[in-house]
Length: 431
Ligand code: FAD
Image (spheres, rainbow, N blue to C red):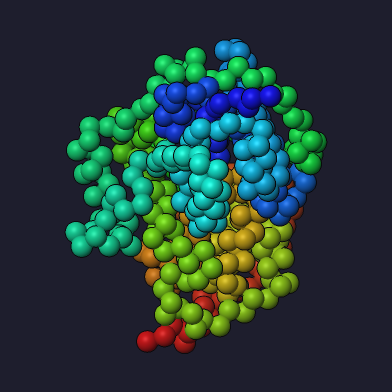
């Protein structure tokens, strides 16, 4: 039997049909396009069986599949080691061309290079595209071509370049819809992927309160941020549409989206930030790394209401407000003197919006070890943070129902912990 001549579009962190760069180009190719998603065993094996993110991915793929069904097409879902899946696809189909969008994480860059090599051995062309960011790799650099390591000049250059190009181009994929293959593939249940339903759900994005974003974004009880982060992580919204919208509506909000790109370019330019301090002078810090203390932080039982409320929100919902993330991260690194990597790993396991670049970047910022980081001697006082940002205690009461019954004593005195942190940092920072 002759094999079907096809192109593939490989979905990864771009789970939408609309305004999808790689998909747009795939649909212009000369062969019917099979949309594909691979549940990668190497990633899945490290996740708990009720991981809400896997469920969200499958739900997002289901939505794509419904849109495809309406035009007589469907998505092919595979599970396995990515290279083995591609190897078997090359025997099943006469693949002419594979299209996908770029991912800038070190693990993925390595994996994608291996897949491109595998495809090349089968004489298959692979084309990858920028889709996840407005500016990638070395598009925003200092005059000497080196990457920015400070946010504000990066942002200024980013804005200058964005305004020069008018706005981010959006890709109308609909014009190529007739080029989707008419193959009808079965859509799997969550259990077939080896996962169970989770009680935790990704909330839909909410841009309704963005007009007051500048005034309200720091107050967790206002609950006025966009909840876009998991959608940006998995690409269920287009960053181009969002940035063009933000540019018209709200510059403070746009600045936050630029923070995301700043950390993505830091990770791309300095991939070892995943496991190392960005500032190597901080390598000498003697972390206490006390396991019992870490458990109290994880379970939200430190006795500091703002810290505990945040950790409980994270444990119960997979989300935590940004202001509170800053407070809990500072508390772990400075009050408890636990290496930021422990906190980063815990967030990575729990956050629905976990994104390596933003997580590592923000954790290193909080620990003082990162680029453009909080100075080491700035130690947030969790009680003052609570007074400033949750004056009426609405947020803390929401997550700590027993609060008014007489709350636990703080596990460590603030003034003592602050002095200890500053001393330890001072001693550890290499001159
Ligand atoms: P909004 O305030 O509505 O912001 C809109 C978007 O801007 C966000 O979705 C996000 O894409 C971007 N953004 C906002 N603040 C930041 C920031 N400080 N850094 C980078 N991008 C930002 N964000 C993640 O997406 N994934 C993470 O793994 C992550 N880990 C973090 C760890 C720590 C210790 C801290 C302090 C922050 C972390 N953040 C992370 C950044 C920020 O807290 C979340 O992006 C934000 O809370 C998500 O909620 P939202 O979409 O409602 O935010």
